[in-house]
Image (cartoon, rainbow, N blue to C red):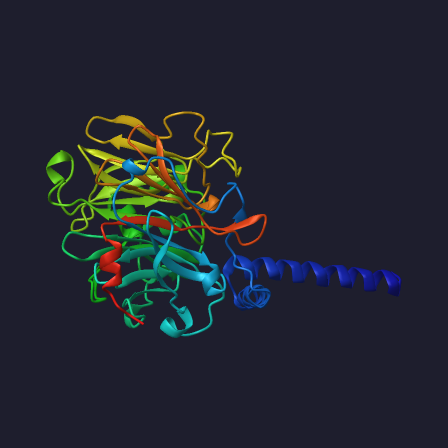
Length: 422
């Protein structure tokens, strides 16, 4: 064999080994992969461009009012990347005209330590006194006063996605922790997956930052014999195997309307299994589940009369939603097995976000919808007629930041003014 051919073969072997090592590093999240990701994040930070920029879909910014008399009262809390914070994550409280009544710009580095390039705020909750509870995705959860003082913070387990208020003042929060081994447990689900995996946990947190309860999603599956469901519907077999994105508790004043459930039961969305479950957080019994009504759904809510409303992303691998007809708000009544579409009511109502998305049933029966990847919040009546919409400021001529959440609160501009912070 000639020296030239031997050199070429040696080079080919070296390249192959380097390539395979890179694949292994990415698959197992080893140090070289983490360093490369950090380096890329540093480049993006230097370029001052947030991660979650989406194609512009609507021809305006700010508010359009379609029926002022039909708008549900209150102010709207919005989480996104905002220009006044140099396109970093923040929170705005706006009135129905779109005027900013208040804003918060928490710094994750100051709160949790370390350096975090363009993280985003996912879940949020506004207290009547102007305190705000929020999570920086996979970094932590914190409570901040109206004056910007951090009252408490938690970073273990990693908080992500939703924050849902309970009648007793506590909150259900999505969390997770990375497992690189069985960690001494013998769950059969570990025979199916490949480590590392992210074990989602259902966390109940007090308003003072105490973790009152932490429920393992893997334990719930094992206890209820649902590993076969994971085999049929599982999208990932390592890493993010469930993708928990919302938890909500059934309140005592609504419980009588749900024959299959009891006050304190929780409804949970596991996006990557297309699965919504209702379980007793004390016994961990799954009382009902579905994985055939939605595609990559978000935000299931108990909405009364036995119904559970779900933000069905109806994912179809497009930005326009043409193949599946766009996103929907689907209602399911477990004790009768009835189904209904709450929105859209007509085919001429464009509405689609393949990821993310929130919805809220308002006291007057209207629906407030967060079309995240379009940067839009839309309020419609129960008959599907638009009454109010807001579109995020454009980053440039062709891009708009994603809006993670828009929530209506019964707080007036006068009450906001009384917070009286510099």
